[in-house]
Amino acid sequence: PGAPIKLEEKSIRLGRIPYRSLREMMTQAVPLLRLLQKKTGAKEVRLVSNRNDYASVIDALARGNIDFAWVGPTAYLSRRDKDALMPVAKAKFGSETAYRGVFIAPAKGKVQGLEDIKGSRIGFVDPESASGYIYPLYLLLRLGINPHTDATVYFLKNHDNVLRAILAGKLDVGVCLEDTLNSLKDKNLQDKIIVLAKTNEIPSDVIVCRQDCPINLRERFFEALLSVKANELPGSPTFMQAFDEDFVEVEAIMKYINSLKKKK
Image (cartoon, rainbow, N blue to C red):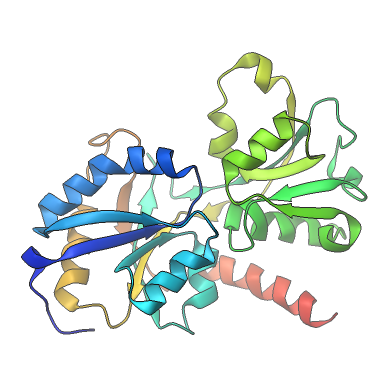
């Protein structure tokens, strides 16, 4: 760990993957950022996001441009060893410490089941997204379907974009976060979509830092995260301590996918 710093002079920068639109993320994050600033005693806590891709958030952490990164488990594991990263805390939404990705399609489209994916246009979120790519890809590969050779693949950068593309009929099938689909409250829009399948449960997002993060910064930020109480902040999760052991299954799935890529 790095040497202690003066927290009262520190602007803590928390990077987050662009899983939703930047405006929505910023709006939802403000109450949590204010609470973390108060609990840490830091000068401020800022949310930093890059609308380009998931990897850019980890890039920023590796370069020292941000102090912590709030990412999915696959984004963390893909860079953990290379960039000497470590987990700090994991998110918990209500009683849930896991989430799923869902395969969705236009209700009257040509894809009515996973077996119809061959020859279709399929939309994923980002190559580093657990629910929007890695876990869905694993499910398809286990069924003998390789979307990269059997279909036309698009990456749409966030979950909302995938949902919108399906509603607009621009894709034959898409993959997004189950919560994103559930956020659709309009019955007429719901009726335009069918769910083809769901992924296995995926461990919740994790907040990570570099191993050389100043020790008092890491410990104070960890304590502040753990102090967030259920229902204290609308739309915000609570947090638990995270360990690498939490992501053993995720790592196994990533290794399986990489082993198939190497066989090409």
